[in-house]
Amino acid sequence: MKKLFLIVFLALLPYSVNAQSNLNKILSSGELKVGTTGDWDPMTVKDPATNKYKGFDIDVMNELAKDMGVKIKFVPAEWKTIVSGITSSRYDISTSVTKTPKRAEVAGFTDTYYKYGTVPLVLKKNLNKFSTWDSLNNEKVTIATTLGTSQEEKAKEFFPKSKLNSVEAPARDFQEVLAGRADGNITSSTEANKLVVTYPQLAIVPDGEKNPAFLAMMVPKGDEEWRKYVNNWIKKKKSSGFFTKLLAKYNLKSL
Image (cartoon, rainbow, N blue to C red; front, side, top):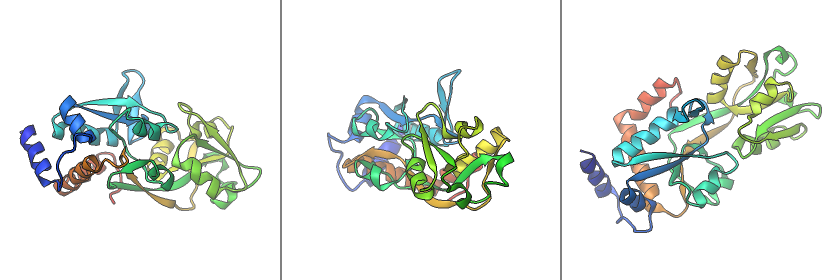
């Protein structure tokens, strides 16, 4: 059944499998290598007790490997190195990241299958003081970011007057807010909704979302065979209802 599924996919591709393509290498080796950070709930979360990954993106990648009839290997990555992991061929594909012009200069992107907005997080007790985006744009305010994330880039745009403090993984920006070393941080609305449940002392600034961003998997730039294969798989999975069910499983909004 798996081989039949694979043959159907290959038949739908308007090109032949190039020997240099990651697609050919994956099928030959029988293994799909996936780079992931494991620190973005609910997309990719690593359980330190078991060293196993779970989450929306992990389910997506497991499904892709299953449909290809290959094994899957998750390769640990950090936000500051997740792009270089693609360019240095440490893995064939990454779990979802935000499409940014800077990343697109050196990496390829699949079609998107999820979007989110950006929101600020502050301590709940400070909501009266920090009730808007603009209230955080102040020279007396410290905004925490995680090194290498798209939020690190956006913080410079949103808070030009504020002091920006970038922390390096495995530390996270919101932890700086919890510890009182920063007044706020920005993150995806997806993660923020999870964090305020896990840490009730945190709150989302009630000023609306900004910067709608589209998530996609990263693949090697120029490897059109592999990129088109994954795009075709995403299209088929959208049509089958796979993504709709997965979004519901993690209480995420659909596109």
